[in-house]
Image (cartoon, rainbow, N blue to C red; front, side, top):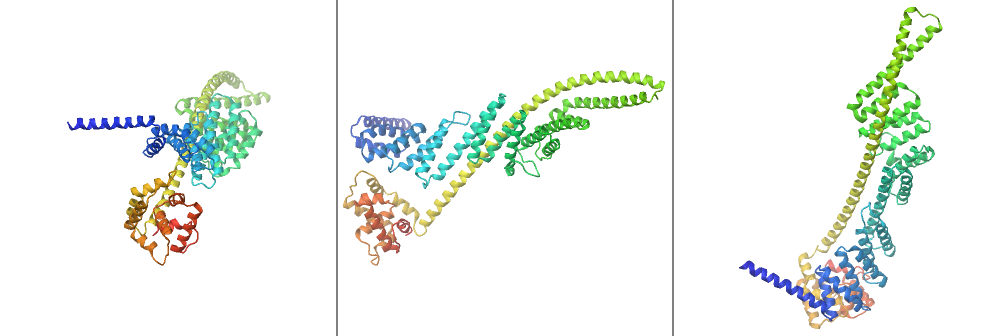
Length: 558
């Protein structure tokens, strides 16, 4: 029974609320609609607030309510996460009201809305460029804004997103084998990183450029970008150890030196990879493959065989072991044939051959033919194996590059998140310290309740309206409220030696209640300059301080 009653009451309340809102939409009392829109906005009912404000903007045009309505409309869209419409509304606001009350906030939220609406790096980044432009305009117009650090952080994040977009595009073309597109995109990304001082991201672009030029055997350009890498030695190349993530750079440098004929220097870089503490099978493959090529250029059979064996073992040790062993046996048989032929030639030239050696020669020739045929067969088989190894190597290398890029992106995002949280903690510590200072000589909960008092809120509402209508009885109630809850403060400002006038006494009470100068001006019906003069006199009489800037802080400490 109770359950049915409760459901009935809730349904009646819902229908009543909907009926009231529909009645409001049909109303022609625009003052009533304006107050209702502000009430919906304050309660977080942004959809209803936006519907009413859209109608009121044109009707209230030319009044201060139109300005406030347009800003509230933008914030209603923003809080509903309709960031595109919010950005358009904020842009409309600061274009119509270039020196308006909310111009600074409108420019900031226009940029932040576009920032929050930017897509992931894989998608079109035209929105990212728009967000950067909007935030840069905000910093140009308001360089001393309290939100400048947040705006700059958003710009940095957007720039990182553009760099990642360029890198992903280059990676796609690399996988497709389009080296011209890889080179073009990598060069653009490199120049962007240089312009915006993005050092870690610059590595990916430079290494891709070096790899393309080495594959093209354009060692002059490859050497130019390797030298550029050396200018950033602390980030990419260390004298005594291979830094994690730079193994492929050392591999490309070794390939470069082999290409220009400085094979020994190339061998040195391949060996450096093998000394790394964090070496993987992929790194070993690269190092052994480079050493195998280098010793082929030097023509050293033992080393060629050794690093061919190590290269194959690093790729697939179980399957390749027998193949490498066969290669070693073939090499031994080749060496045997070579030396036997030399001995036979010497014997024939000196006519010292014995008849017993003739049979040996025949056998040797036969063995040589068999070995030759065996070697040729095995070389064909080895060539096929190496082709397969090369394909597997390129596949693993591509996976490695993708993994390195993903890791770098994760590290960058984590560092940005950590810095942001550190800034937030610092700001909150400052805020907490200010609260502690205010509350040193008073009951904090008492002041909170006073500031949130219904009568105080009524004065604030009047001070933020078009006109201000405060009765004498309301003024007396306000003074009585403060005298009751802040007796020490009242005794201080009422002391005969302070000599405050009635108006100065009233202004001191309003400052204690956190009323700002513009509100004081409207409540007392005087100009802003007169308010400043009154505040300066109060500061001098109560605290012996000149000017009005420190009055608020001095009064709040009482």
